[in-house]
Length: 369
Ligand SMILES: O=C(O)C(=O)C[C@]1(C(=O)O)C=C[C@@H](O)C=C1
Image (cartoon, rainbow, N blue to C red; front, side, top):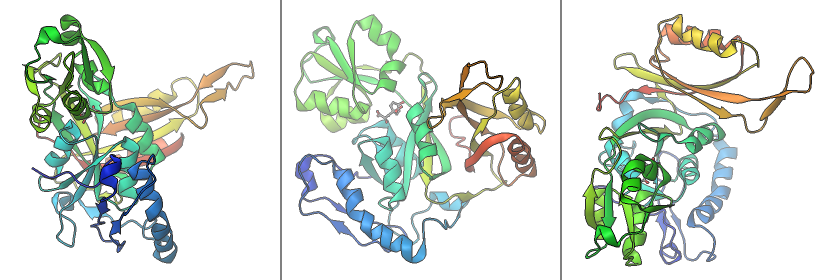
């Protein structure tokens, strides 16, 4: 199993935190001797690297001239032979760590306290990739990551589907009847909604499933359990009271793999492309947008709409004082950007979209089909 390192939040650990940037960019190893106590490790880490990066950017503008990866490179280690560093949100034992290891079996999985920190870790060259959840078959979309995809400029270079099997965990000696409360990530609580209602436990949300397990173990709680993985049970020394407590046995979370550079899209394997666009207000405009794919026999696998945050409302053209909500549309379609039909579809969409960005064209994870 890959070891989790470096990006930590406990102040004690910060005293010895050491981060080595293992990719092509010659940013030096960063060592911390001391941090202001209340400041998050990550924030301090970023600002300490900021000056370095600025210098570098001014000199050779590395970040604004990305070097595309080939699609086969997705599974390799970095070019200098060291292990790929992959950021995930959560602590050891989180499903996201398992997803990072499924994507890159020999990687060094790097925990981050927030999704945003994982994005920034890639952007600041602290890690090589980030693996972040985007949707779940029971709980639906992880909206925060949709929003972050647009706020940051990373590229989607792959996807990973992970079967999520939740357990109800408690300290040794604690029985189901002793529990009145359960902690977990909101998605995990939503995926076990029916089971938890049947048992009659109150729910409390924390940042990730493994953190819930860690908290229950650390504080030796007797009335509180955690919904988390069997590997979290092992890591934090908890007892598994019940297994497979998700509301449907087919519980799958889809994660995106993010990198600084896009991959060169291929046509040998099934590819998927993710885009985001906005449209003028008007009857049938979304219908017209989706038709650019239907006309070319391109199958859509996902559509998600999110409010356009910097311009959430738009006045109606007829000047009657009414206002519309403005939206961004995220669409995944089954074609590679190397295919002419995909290029034509996007050229067509561009004729009337007010904004369009390709988030990535990447191989489909076929392991769960
Ligand atoms: O809390 C975790 O263990 C996570 O990795 C996060 C997360 C999510 O955000 O959806 C990942 C997979 C499961 O769907 C539940 C939680």
